[in-house]
Image 1: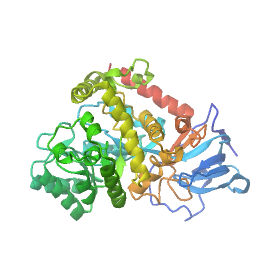
Image 2: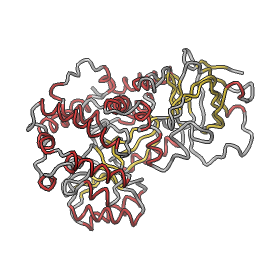
Image 3: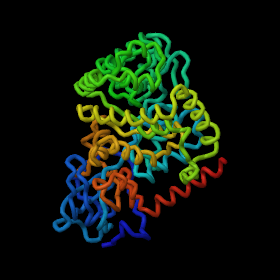
Image 4: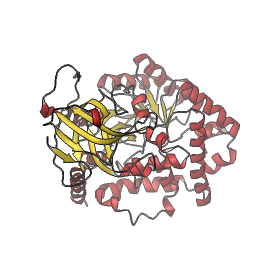
Length: 476
């Protein structure tokens, strides 16, 4: 038996097939070369929070063949084996709000974002607005094993108003535009429909109606012309950035529908009874929330934040920093200019309070970052910060971890394949050197990553990061 060390270096690589198939793990006895055995690992049950110590997890190609006590595990003695003593195994992480190919705003994302996700343990992403053809090509290459990257579910281009503010968008002015866009994206293979803020009211209603007819989910921003309650009742699957929540928690909601939204006004008119009523509706309708709390904090506190010591900037190409981040910085600064810093700090705290209230009311949550849009929002890295913000909002470490593991699998109806570490599931996992249920910051202590059955040990993820740094330097 060949034994590889899981938490110490050097390690030997172990390549497994990446292609996702309908292979049945019990159909035949596997060849020894198809197996990888993880011994003496603690498996984190993200449903219950149970720590299952001294487990042996056997991978057969890209599936989990078995999970059980090491003392009774049976496997061919010449199978490749990894001693994971002291390690904690969690399901692969999801970032449920990313932009992979955002027009020309984030060039070289293939060489920057994709490896940063994998090195950070993010094995799946929900792409909330990108150029569909390019993302589909990437997805095909990843699934065929010719490219390294996370599992991708994508909306393709976003639907926005007659004059979209961002690239990778489709202009919607009329209900006819709306219905055509929904059908067109469904035909092209989009996984869901993403709404932006400026869509006219009659067109929003047409999107909701057509999406139901075409059996495709619609999610994203609560449009400026709509109430959060209306969108929830219409079947919108997820809200992003808490848009609509503060409006719907205020007696001035009708006024906000006409514009004049500022965080100072949100705070001044916030009504706990209205907020509780909205929370109850969202819970009843199972309307998911993806609050992007790291982005919200960063945007509100941008002018008082010191990023000079942020070493992660070495992974960011010049065009991202000097053009796109600068563009976002100017937009954020202008957008929040009506509120002073004391008000904005108070609003950041209030967002955590509102998230805590929604969570206690039974509203389901997803972890997402909006990476790499914004300023100093990094692919992969910022997802770990997002989990810490959930804990700051009152989630337990287990509940925070669920927002990036079990909950996304449930959101996409993929709980039979992903989201937990159980026999028969796809081998998307992250090996940690410390217990994430003791401290959610321990999700950053990554010793290895398994992506669709392929094992990237620590030295390989470090090599990925070095490659990203080199790619960023090529574009100063």
